[in-house]
Length: 268
Ligand SMILES: Nc1ncnc2c1ncn2[C@@H]1O[C@H](COP(=O)(O)OP(=O)(O)OP(=O)(O)O)[C@@H](O)[C@H]1O
Ligand SMILES: Cc1ncc(COP(=O)(O)O)c(N)n1
Image 1 (spheres, rainbow, N blue to C red):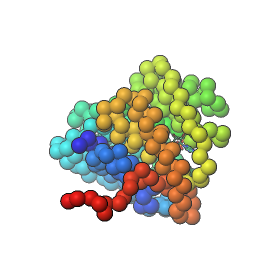
Image 2: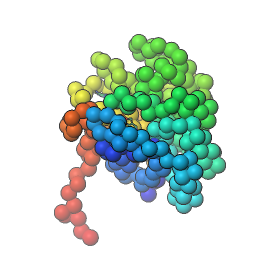
Image 3: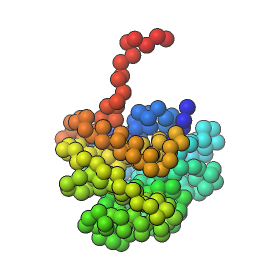
């Protein structure tokens, strides 16, 4: 079975973070493993608490995983402090981890800040150069490129600026656009647009986590980057279009929209 690892924070409400990643990888028939960077107390209306794991314990989780079941791809999500990011970079280098997808999570859909200022510079210096692809949303791409994004051309410029600076591909996600949900991939000088119809669903909690872990699952399966991103977007759109409506705020998507869940006829 193909294997993948998510290194991210736990979302107690199950729509984003580690929980979204494991559901997504499982829906792709990929064996999912996790190294937890922090526990969050959160629901669809907001984040009420964050408890980081000590860096030594994150290191212990990563050693346990890599020395036993090496993942064929790795997704990195919420990591709130520089010392945790340094541990991740050191372990990924040491074990020669392949197919690293970094989602530079900065602010939750609900508005809560999920990373410190100091951590952003460690992210840039230590982790970005190890990534195969970064997946910033528009506000994150603005912070990372120093450019203002107003249209498709400026999304392309920001993706190129970030990608050429850190030597990796960049998917600038357009979920924060108004009329469409078009994302742009910059990879080694080539631009690929991934056009998405805007789905009328306010329940977008965890879209970024889901997309990046679907990309990691597809890379783990051996797909090329463009195909991995295209298939991940298709999965994300299906999960969003399913129209799940849970909680009082921006709710989660249905990660299981394509799983039948009925095992009555299974012969065992
Ligand atoms: N209403 C929508 N309809 C269709 N696709 C959407 C919608 N909102 C977001 N997406 C898609 O979801 C993916 C994640 O993009 P988005 O810009 O929302 O990331 P994000 O802000 O990091 O996500 P998160 O909400 O988890 O923080 C992208 O492929 C984007 O195009
Ligand atoms: C643990 C964790 N990781 C990531 C996010 C970002 O996802 P979103 O912006 O959809 O809330 C989150 N809310 N919680």
